[in-house]
Image (cartoon, rainbow, N blue to C red; front, side):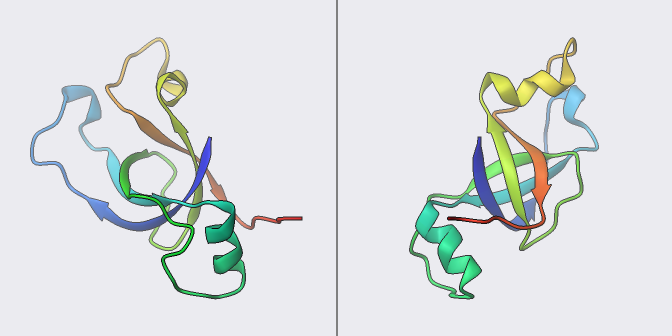
Length: 99
């Protein structure tokens, strides 16, 4: 599981029938340095990786920090139904404490 910052939403023009009505986020995975920069109020690109698309069932918004499950774990909440997704918003984080 990774922590990502939501930087926007995207819309699919064509999708699998099981995904109709879904919300899709664009998120940037953060390293420890990226989390520390957010905590310090810095707005630079250090500690940020390449953005990717995330299935959202929780209603996260732009600027939120989310916990993202990827791969086979991303489809687990939908079992026994199958959904063709690679990343799922598993939690909206109120805060992250780094010690």
